[in-house]
Length: 123
Image (tube, rainbow, N blue to C red; front, top):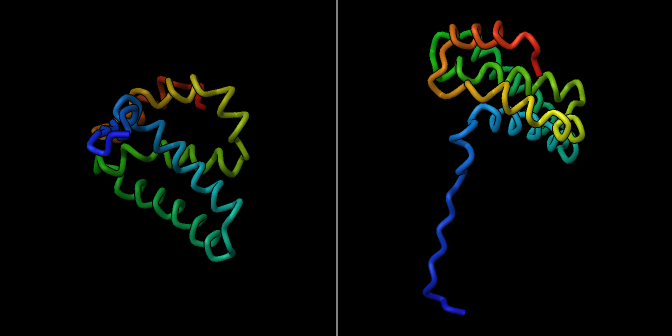
């Protein structure tokens, strides 16, 4: 074993390819983690803060920073409350991937609306 060896890790290499999909999964599974192991107060804050963040995104939707995350937060919350995780994600991975593929950090509210109109079949 050589202690002078250096290992480089490309952190979040795939995030750049489909940033929006990763936010969606992080949102949904963070809620699931709180559901499974959280205390009462963890659940109280863990469930209410994502809802508040979604409303803030909607209120400030003309800012790209907020508008680019609206769909991920909405569908993450929606699918969590519909118990759509685990087997749902394994079956619909390609569908979720293609749905979020065209959304990036520069996506504005007009592009989000066009995206929803174009993809009438949502995830």
